[in-house]
Image (tube, rainbow, N blue to C red; front, side):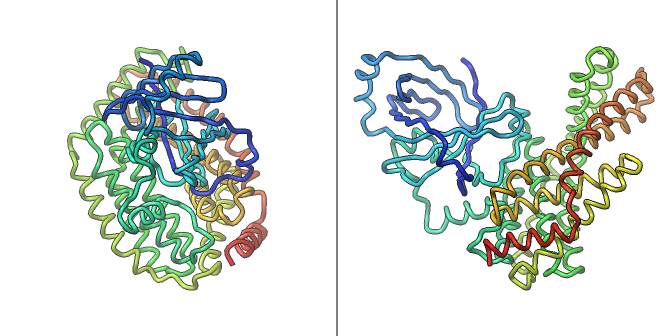
Length: 463
């Protein structure tokens, strides 16, 4: 039975131009629903199908067969009481992906969700939702189509749904103050990081740690954006708190990344990296990963949860004044200036440490632009996507640098270190050439011009 790998999200703010796109009207009815499977009828224009889906969450198995009009009309009455109608539109995403946006009709009017299908579990794990995506619903049975068709919209307890949705939105909203928005976003990321670590089983530990570390980096970007109100002492203390929590998880994640980077290197290099050498190196890296996981057990994750929980308790006490653009401008200006300086250093010498510094500054800019995207989504969403692309290129470069350092320490393996090192360096150069072309455009403005432009966007939307 073929498998599909999908993730589902609420649509927080529909992207510009979505309503003008042609859509397909869909009617769905359910013949059978159980905890693990569903049997569905669908009418999509002239296309009539019967589909069986097995499983829950991100990865499910699916079989679909076409029906003629007579077969469909004989079965459709059996779905009474378990039907829904919606309009589906498609939007292109980076990396060849597509967003499938469903706007529901009838009793579900007002609900909009977006699904993305991936070619592999690895691609799904590496996906970063664009700013217009809201709370993730993957695996939430209340928002499955079968549940919506049979039970209607979820009805959480008073205030519960509003809080969950707000906490998941990594952006400031026009109807909230700057200080309120920053606290809300930071609180949502702190809770999400803890939830990931608590819910991770042995098989999903690597994904949970990766996700939690990204949540912590997002909190630290919020802190840097809020530096105009926090003050240096509070900023240092809170940044150190979440940085140290992330470091508790880093060794396990680093071991996993080295294995993934070697696999990617082998795929790109073909016969240039002899299979026998690659297998020996891969076995050594796998042994390192197993040792790290065995030594730590769940202890590091528990300590990280405690540290994050302590930081969460402090977020409500953050002193963030004034509650306007003047709270945000110093942090955004500093972030952009640091990025321009880091780019200048990379242009001069292309050293790994300078590239890594540029990567950190680009990630800060990416996260901060995501926070401010509502100021002018039509312009800032593409800029945010480009910053994301640049961060990924620089991240791949850094992963290769870490792998090269590991290679130099492998005195116990029969590896042609010189040849493998040259191969890594060549791939790094290719990545950096592409990254620098993108960085030149991203940092083309002088800091003063960038600051004034962002201030004008904010004033037009938030003031």
